[in-house]
Length: 76
Image 1: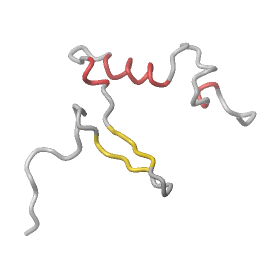
Image 2: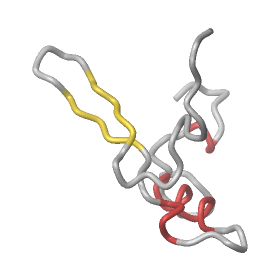
Image 3: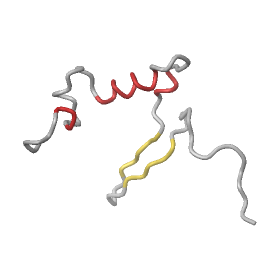
């Protein structure tokens, strides 16, 4: 870390004053709203590291929130 970095720049959360890991913070944020539930904090993507060095990222089958949705759009 550079000398001008702050404790919030540490992605491991070791210097975080809350004592929470990044995953715990994510869960806390996504379940804090009054009408939220545990499914709001479920993973929304899956990743697959391939042998050729490519990382494939897909929307998880269990994701409560998915991109798109609504009506299908057609080109005129």
